[in-house]
Amino acid sequence: VLTTGLYNDWSSTWDNHTLLIEGLSDAMEFHKELKGATYPSYEAIDLANVVGEYPLDDRNSSLAALFREVGRLRLLADTLVYRVNNKVVFSTEEELEIRNDALYYGYFFGGIARYMYAYYWALTPNKPGGVINKSALIPSKDLYNSAIQYLHKAKQYANAHQQGVINTLIARIHLILGNYQEALEAAEFGLFKGDEDFKAYFNTVNINIWNSDATSLRIQFCAADRYGDYIYKNPNEASRIPIIHVNSEIKVQFDTDTVIAGIKYNKGEVYKRKFVIQNKYELASSPIVFASWQENSLMLAELYYRLTQDIGIALDIINFVRAEYKLPALHKELISEEYADFYDLLAEERDKTLCFTGLRIMDQRRLNKWHRAPNNSWMYFPITIQEKNNNPNLK
Image (cartoon, one colour):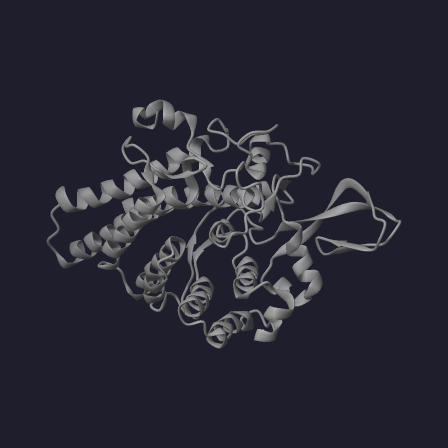
């Protein structure tokens, strides 16, 4: 029961974090002209300003509960490990299986909670990190390393598929940290084609917030225009970029023929501007992919290139992923023709394949693709005023 509850608790924490971090990144946008876009707190997240008309700060109401939710997840996971190791005696073979299962989930979600602190939160724009038990700020780097330690502990109790999930997540963390050799060693034992994705699950009671706040039901966040442009350029991209177009009340007229969000507007004519919204989470119960073989493969492509400069191997792996969506293979000549370098192409492939899963901001940070003024914007969520008021070590 505790392990099931822990999984459910993580799922309900994960969907809010992924939606809002995509809003902070350049993947999702808030347009108050769209019907349903009514939360000023969402607009502040989208703008990411430290100062300005709608500054993102520690009083943001949409973030108020999120930081507590990560703390609750961390506490539940750590408490489960403590109780299993110190409060319960397991004797029979069946009881020992229950013990091992509990330790796997306790260490696994304990690691994920620490990863979430490191990935999502910051005390100031230049001080990312989190807290544990009212501690002073623990820097992101330390939390990432702690997450890796917990995931290695979870691996002792994991089955083959769970070990693949753990290795993919460890590779992701090492990639963020710039530990490329360690990332490669983990990714080589991560998820591969045929392995099941690890997902957050929802139902009609515990709904996926993407469905309620980023679909035609209510468009608090729409997708960035470029996702429509990707499909306009190559219609086959629709197989991996699930979007639909919606009308707005914004009227536009252009001096030249123009394509925006995958829609062509003819010179001189007046149109109602169309926007794109994600269609990956079309149901309240739609799951969110947390780790997949596609992500693991794209990490392998990047890591082989970083460590060997072998563009052939890197493109072979990228093309292996593209084949899943029946997309034509890429050739190295394309890089010099259409991209600044290999990493520019890689960022686009990751953007398309991993869209709407919360990973875009990871690439923006590490590949220098931030879309706001770098000295006047947040790349993380600000730790909330409630936490600061309750934690004397954050003063």
